[in-house]
Length: 319
Image (cartoon, rainbow, N blue to C red):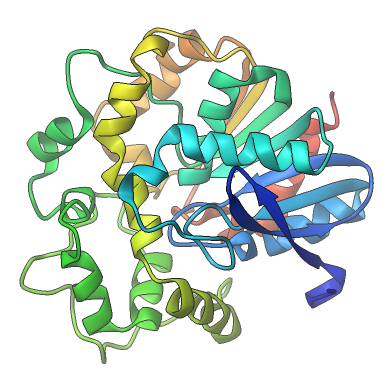
């Protein structure tokens, strides 16, 4: 089926689930991995831009999202499942190696794809979330709660059903507007007494249209938020599962891009030191470039669509 601007859609059986994949173009394949709360659609501009430059852009809805299956069990959302989905997808598409571009959770999954299966990744461009080496001394959720408390969004996401009920009270479209327009570089809190009103007016930025919100909303109303939130509920489980990779380096050529208004650039407090003062480069020795975009917030691939497409192209054309 052909959709907007010649993007084709299909469903692929991979790793025991049905994955929805959007594709456009011919040439070397580029796998585009979205974050929370997004879909393949977050890459709409890059899909067109990369296809126009002679690449085959492949953007799945990740497990739990959109038109891809959302298994009910929390333990079905570990990093092994998420990376396994991608390896199985590449097998199903008969692709031995791809360029990978990830944003937010998609970046987290992309780092781990490179960690577990570097043979499948030609080069990597990650947005918003740097590699986070495993700290053997502290479980992630204990660290998160100690740093930001119980109303921090990741803390709030842990209680089953609680945040889903709050999102249902606000309505899907309002929830998506609140996330996608968030520009405070500080931590994101979802107060227990309520995250605002279902009727609050949220002005959309120039890079996000009502049509875009309507598309995201239609998909999240169908598939819900539980699958996507389950990624956060597996943080401690992932920490346990990844014990064998403590201290492991990522040996794939990489480029990293973040906005200076992105909450991930400021939280936790030592993040910028890690990115700029040698820690990141030590863990990712083939890190070739770090780009900090001024005045740009978290949803960087939508906010600065053309620049991000150019950055991706400039890097992957070297390989």
